[in-house]
Image (cartoon, chains in turn green, purple):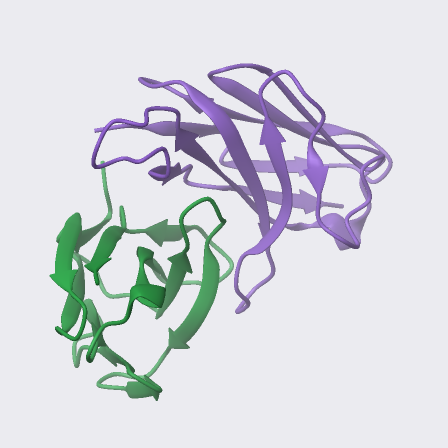
Amino acid sequence: GQQVMQIPQYQHVQEGEDFTTYCNSSTTLSNIQWYKQRPGGHPVFLIQLVKSGEVKKQKRLTFQFGEAKKNSSLHITATQTTDVGTYFCAGHRGSTLGRLYFGRGTQLTVWP
Amino acid sequence: GAVVSQHPSWVICKSGTSVKIECRSLDFQATTMFWYRQFPKQSLMLMATSNEGSKATYEQGVEKDKFLINHASLTLSTLTVTSAHPEDSSFYICSARVSSNSWPSSGNTIYFGEGSWLTVV
């Protein structure tokens, strides 16, 4: 079964609207990573969060790691058509030498 | 939902031997599978893109003779690490792309296997 839950599975927004995807794990994660996959491409690493409550920003993207290190979110402000793609979260449970647990991904469509 | 099974989850092999990792799409057909490698505390590194019935496309810096990829059917791709050495120890993960073009998949929905941890001793 899926170890890391990610919602929503699909999101369709009008250009300029905000977008948020959420990840939740039943167990504490050592870290959380976010990936973006453009249509026809492969997942590309975006960022890694390690500390409890950590918040990082990349231009219009804001990443948060929950205080309990069980959940995370990616928020995009004022979406653009270039934001289209699937966003994956993934995390290690315990040792970072072990398995990386991925969410199913959120497929974002941005209408112009 | 779609499931990608990767086997084995953990493998330890002796230096100089070869090891095969399988990636299967259990309930869907995957014309394209991706193989990744991940070192501790680092992001996924795409090794190659595997298309059913054709030769894999390797990323720059990845030795195709060392990392043999076979995608003989729409549900199975294999990665064989030949003449493994300790520096090949890593976490290998595959993903499979759903073939369907029906909305909302648009032919781009992918699912990851759980990964295989290889230790070469």
